[in-house]
Length: 324
Ligand code: ADP
Ligand code: MG
Image 1: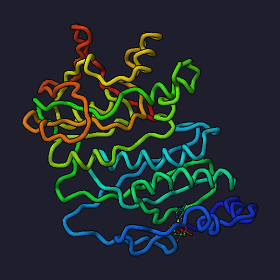
Image 2: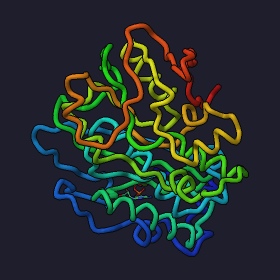
Image 3: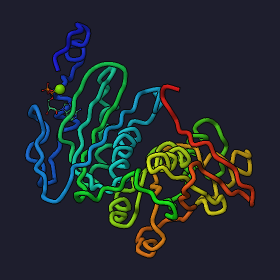
Image 4: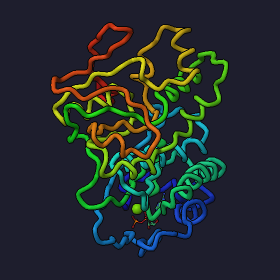
């Protein structure tokens, strides 16, 4: 897009590398999906759609000092920016196909860009996702990915279709990424590596999401903490939930953290786990092929009731909000 503000021209003239050679050097790669008829280089990318599929589309933005700190490792940032978008595709059961990347950069730092692109493409290659376009502008560091995926027509996993009596399940562990953030903020953990890895380079549960199609009634990815994200399923499905504390899948490090600090709510409210939370009717539980933990049941009355050592507590359904 043409710039009206005169200073934005500096982006091209003040740097040794132009916007176009930057795209060619760091972001233009051979595409691998046969559906990509046109990738980077024209005004639009072109995708052909296979019969019997719907296109799932999602966008997530990461802003410096809101989602990450200025000194954040650029490899991790490239990984995480793509991972959070692939996680949204996973939660609807979509198979990732292609992404676009909008970069707003304060300056052109070639080492930073190389590490960012390396992190981004290492994950993209793992899931055969093609980068098919984007935009590059100057300004405060802001990174946006739009991810496109394919899901069999009418079968996407939604938030609005949980039913009373459904078993509530999660993949993986809860709170490891939250512990990673605490470690970054100074918490002294004996075995920090796994939690830091989960915080810095989350794994989107792409295969698990697709395996839940036709089995799960509702699904969401846990980006803002279990209580908040399960809360979205409950609100949109107009149901409630009861959760068993003893059933929550917690790593040894998270259990140690709770013992040290008394902060037992952390694994329920901390974000960035990018595991899936889904609900399944009891007669379909036997069809589940993915590793999972059953943590509770969907109830017809609204709200979340937590059973912790025989004491029932009402949890406030609330997740992170940018404007509150
Ligand atoms: P236009 O001005 O027509 O929007 P651009 O000059 O912004 O086109 O982009 C040229 C080509 O490079 C387009 O195909 C666009 O999708 C792609 N592109 C621009 N920035 C990026 C980026 N950060 N990552 C991937 N592709 C990009
Ligand atoms: Mg453009």
